[in-house]
Image (cartoon, rainbow, N blue to C red):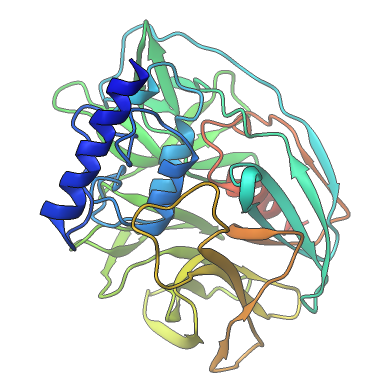
Length: 410
């Protein structure tokens, strides 16, 4: 059987190399997470997502291959039947099965810049916090024990005539919904995306939601809709800002007394609400600062970054942008035994500076930054605070950004 499987894989790869030439590598039909056609789902497939060389690795369907897809791939890490798993349905079962977990961590992070990311080598799927001084000097690393990535079934709520599901639901051997990718917890409320909304009539759709955490179960306060690929959410005052990242439909939304939408002619990779009221939207080439009317009031150039994964602002008003670059030539079929073909970069942008050049980050083997935060408080307790037991592990914001935002006004 092993010989037969190996022969099939070899023939498939000969087909790829000879027939497809320079075209993006497609995926083996029926095995959506097996990106290298070896009839297994391993680290090599994760590396294919980072390399962007598999045409079918746009798992979230936004028209781009990027970090969201890496998170989607990782969400399925311990999923039964993973080999032929091609994504959960939006349909919401009547009586889903529920499970719960409690995760507690504590870290001393006062006045520190913190990057959540992954190392290279055999530990490439493990998560850690990399802690830096305000001047950018690296201090230490704290390992995170969230790489088991159990499928966490969140909650199924009622909002008027709608059913709202947060996180992945399970019924029998099937999974439904979407993993949470971003959340802000502020003043006892959780602002979450994406959620699945099932109206009384019509098809389910993706949206964002504001939940009241003081109620048991949580109550839905508001639904924010308009984009099918909401990717980042921030809150400033009473207003909620959301980016929609979708090929041909990129936009910045503001939900306040009324809903506003600004079409974007660039790809919104990350979002940051500054205490000054400026809403920053980040791309690898530049950062755009928008005011409360969504007009651009500041443009910051970033030199030398290929992919941006996070933005933060420290107490002095300095912006920090993190991301990673690829080492050319990017392998079409990365090997888990080779050194990483990507490396971490960061830009430090002083207040009112027109731009900055990135520099490579050297920090205990950090290879793939995934987000960055600035902490004011001495200790942050990462408790299960309703929504901080993970549906996926691609976003540190699920538990750090929420705690940080809640304490920023204290």
